[in-house]
Image (tube, rainbow, N blue to C red; front, top):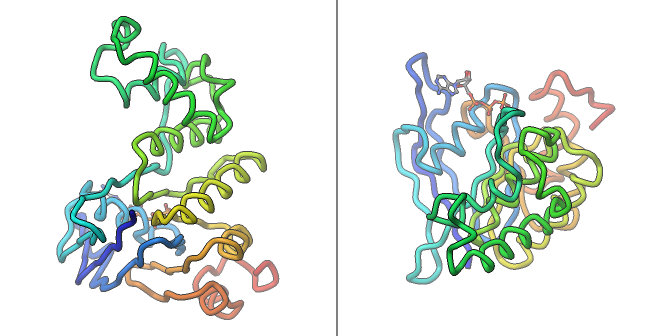
Amino acid sequence: MSGAIHLQHVGVDYGQGWVLEAINHSFEPGQCHIIMGPNGGGKTSLFRSVLGLTPFVGDISVQWPSGRVGRLGYVPQKAIFEQSLPLTVLDFVLLNLTKVPLFLAPLWPGFKQQRAQALASLTRVGMAQRAHLRMGQLSGGEQQRVLFAQALLHHPDVLILDEPTTGMDEAGVQYLENLMHELVAQGKTILAVHHDIAAVRRILARTPGKVHIVNHHLVDSGPVEDVLTSAKIETLFQHFSARRA
Ligand SMILES: Nc1ncnc2c1ncn2[C@@H]1O[C@H](COP(=O)(O)OP(=O)(O)OP(=O)(O)O)[C@@H](O)[C@H]1O
């Protein structure tokens, strides 16, 4: 099952003017939607509005195909884990599965199954072998992978990824792009912020989806070949040269 997301006249203002203004748009279900745009253009604010994590004006609705309400999964831009925090990767994922305090969890009848579920999710992102390490001992890219594993735990129908490959090495990027492809093939909807034009072209060459440019307004939206033209990129992202595009 997958959800379509509809935004009607959506605006966000933190008190110093509109960060997002009059956004009227729909994200179709079962596709990979890549959101691009300059820093500070309001991409995270858009995601946080969809998730109900920031106040907004206008209306946002998720339309589910059946009577059942689906699930949203979210991987934030970054998380900071103090190195001395005695929380392992496995603990961190388990925290999202168990309602029992972690030190009691092994005594819980369902613990074995929850542990297996946590490890299966970590395996999907290539992090099962590092499950025993403390979160703070992981690199930024590895932490991103664990956050991704956490978002997958409850089988979300719509997955919202804020710069998911930040700090990831080539292997991490590959894991993630394969997973994104797999999830869309299963009919899920993905919304992902990305800054890397080459990566966006690579992702959308094999995964059905669109590019949406956000810079306070919805500037452009459509298939990658229509939106990521050299001329448009030059105008929007002055720090990218037309040659790199
Ligand atoms: N909680 C907040 N309170 C006040 N201002 C905020 C808040 N969150 C974001 N902003 C401001 O809103 C603007 C848009 O921020 P946002 O994080 O949505 O942009 P972005 O497009 O995701 O940026 P980036 O590409 O750098 O991640 C920025 O100027 C930011 O400083």
